[in-house]
Amino acid sequence: VPTSDSSAFYRSLGRVSVRTWVLMLGGAFLIASALYATLIIRAYGNPPISWGDPRTLENLWWLVSGELYRGYLFGLPLSQYPAQISALAKLLFDQFGLVGVALGLWGATELFRQSRRLASALAVAFGLQMLFAIGYYSRDSYIYLIPGFMIFSLWIAVGLHFLVNQLTNYLAHRGMRAQWHLPAVSALLLLLPATNLVANFSAMDLSQDTRALEYGKQVFAAVPDNAVIIADGDEHIFALWYYRYVEKPNSRVAVIAKGLAGYAWYRDILRREYPEWTWSESGGLPWDQFLQTLVTSNQRRYSFFWTDADPRFESVFRFQRVGLLYEVSPMGPK
Image (cartoon, rainbow, N blue to C red):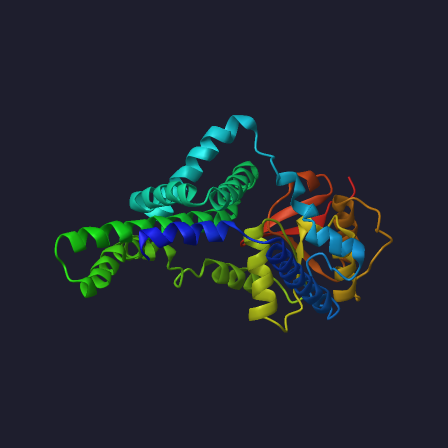
């Protein structure tokens, strides 16, 4: 694209009519509504894991509003912000390399010269996304950088566009025939993604990472058929859920997420999934008392195992190490 036409092109992107905005927002609303409708439909199929069980308005709102994760929002202590910003800046260079970051900054600058409205909108979106990711107090907050990195990729594309113009003009000035301009420039620009691919492929290749599968195999091999496993931590919960419902769909071993025991919707799912268990009137109990009641009410018929020995329960339960788990039994009378 000639440089003279580029300015008009970028300015046209920044002039979006009200009608276009309405159509885009309306389309986004329809897509989101279809997604949430799918969740509701799937929930009525009574799957063993239905996050939030969105069959009621209350449960649906709990799910779509992210109530479970609100405490993480801007939960990072102020003293940790410098280290977090430094880590995320390093991640930006790890993703795009020095050349990619330079192209992105150049592209953002050139875009601002061509269309301040479009450039400002992207800059605000990028800044807000980065602020959200930096302040989100969780181990995997870097995941929320992805939308911001997508915006940065657009700036890289703009930077490449202007670089192509500069190189094309340079090659023309040096006397290279016009039909060779695009192949020569394309070969040069492909070096950036090719370098990233070669440098990072081994780290991204997880085809041989079977740790979660092996963990599930070892756990299920060590417990009886009537076992109830109370799992804590995402690495345990999701690995065991996968193994139970994908690898061992006919197993009667139950895997309970300890962190969800305090939510009424999860207790309702457990009652539907395991009607043969003895259920007491525990709807209003705190999560720890709910689990304590569950174990003591069913200990005669089922074997209970926990993935971790929880010190908060040491006064009421005895934890005995069995392989990768802890077998749990109530304390006898003193």
